[in-house]
Every structure is written in C-alpha cells, then in structure tokens.
Image (cartoon, rainbow, N blue to C red; front, side):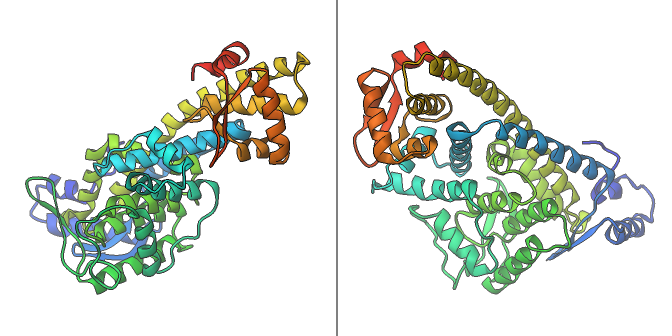
Length: 413
C-alpha cells in the first residue's frame, strides 16, 4: 500500500513537538469532517467509528471494480454445467477454508459427498451439509439480508447446525456474559457486553449495511468489522461473520469474488487480524480506513487468484467445446446424446466428482428425466457412459476410455 496516507497513531508518534496532542486532534477533525468521509453510526471506546476515503483507497476500489469486470466476463464464458460446477467448486473451497480457520478439518470430497447424499444422517455429514447448503443457496439465489438481531441469531443457528457447542448462547438471543479473545499470550479483544449492548450494536451494524448513504462495498466491509468487534456469541463468531461478509459483498461484487475471500484470509491471517487491531488502537480514534484498505488488498488477491483460475477454466471449456463439435459431426450419436456427452465432459472437467445427477443432465439437455434415462441407457450400451450410483440420486459419468479418447482436454482433470 502507498505510504502517503498514514494512520493517526503513526502521525502522533512522528510528531516530536509539545503540541502533538492538539495536532492529532486537528488531524482527526479534518478527517472526520472531510466531505469524502463517512460516519458509520457505531461507537467504540476510542471514538465514533468513521471511514475516510483518501486517494489510496479510491484507487484500490477502482482496481477491485476493474477486476470484477474480468471475473464477470470469464464467468459468462462458462455456460451450462461448467459454470455451475465452477461456482459449486468455489463454494466448497470456501466452506473447507472457513472450517479450517476454525480448526475444523474437512475436505472438498467430504463436503461434496455430504451435499450429494442429503439423506445421510451421520453427524459428520450433517455438520458439513448444513453449512455448505447455506453457501450454495447464497451462490445460486438472492438470499434476503438480515434486518433484525433475531435474523442474525437465525443465521448463526444455521451456520452452527450440527456442531457440538461448548458454550451455546445463554441469553435471550446472544451471550449474556463477557467474552475475551486471546492470542495465546495476552488479551487482544473483549467482546461487547451485556446482551442489551450486543443487540444495540447489531442494530447499528444492520442499519449501516442496509444504508443508502454509504457505498455498498464500504458498508459491507465495515459491517464485518463491527460484527467481529461485538463478538455476539461464545463460539462461531468467525464462521458466522465470514458468511455474513460473503452475503453483504454480493451486492457490490460478483458471487465468485464474494465466495473466494476465506482462502485469502486464511493465507494472510496476520494482516487480517492486524487490521482489526489498527482500528482498536486508541490513538486512531475509531478510524476504520486502514481496515478497509487491508480488506481491499485481500479482495484484490482473491480476484487475481480467481481470474487465473477462471482463465484456465475457459481455456479448458473452449477445448472441450471443440472436441464436442467433432463428436457431433461424426454422426454416431443423436443431437441429444451428443449434448449429454458434452455435459458429462463438463462435469468431469470442472466438478469435484466426475459424475452428474440425472436431474442435472435432464435440465442441461432440456428434456424430461425419462427421456434422459433412455438416452443414457443407450450411451451405456455403447460404452460411453457408466452409471455410478443407482438411486438417491442416480449418478452418471463418462467412462475413462471414452473420455480419454474423445475429450482429452478434460480427461485428466
């Protein structure tokens, strides 16, 4: 980040004069009262939370929005099963990483299997399935934002469904006792208390994120700070907060970007937690600017990784499409059979599992499930397709031999 804009604590320590107290107050007022600053409607012990928008932040925001155009363009180049499976893969990666940050071990295959076998009632399946479904719903539809503290509690219960909580909420909605966060050596944060203050703080957070007076990207990021600062629960604040952040970021950013942040946060925990500490430094008097700058930098890293990933996906899809056209021109398969083969090639290339459900294939081909069964049965007889699961749900995949011969671009994925 450019160093022209310094936090107030740095300015204070750089000032050797006897007037540095008054100088820092003057600098604080200039920032608070600037036409480009935003009062965020939340009070800290060190001052009212506010966001200044210096040139550095404006440039970062521009860079984020430019990359969004690239992300959206690449996603438009991935239609059909390819696009759905790329998005699903991002969801599962986000769930695995969010779990990992909380020291909950899970794999992509476990999450995918838990989602596919929805009737499985093991504790492991349930804890993974419910959390992943929240993110899937977020990725494939528009979920109403929470409007009340009660809505936040409902989301928390969904996020933590299947988890055995050591300390479940013991207040009306949230915790009723104090909570302290330690870094292993010292206390680094003390959550808001009592419960009435938690409720008031969450109402302030919701007013901010739903406000039309603050740009959506800024309100989403600063609301994330407020939620984690309040720390309304004993357990699960991190996972709930990151889920809410993904939800809030869907308005200003694309779904793929909103679903790619946990991994970058996990890779840059020190920067992430340091950004929280910067706001809480008494000498910064409640300025959230450097927190928002850091979050922009993390978003940019996520976007760069995402663009690289999607670019490779588009290259693979283009090659598969060309191979599918060659297959159709051979005349050995009907148009619907060729469509189903191309759909299964996309599943093999972009899905976590190489097999697709009967319903997915029927929707992709634009025909009913009974017709789809008949086409797939014919393809099975020809050695092109194999049924990998016989019920709940029916699953089909390309045979390895067929995929390697006719879809070499995706056969090894």
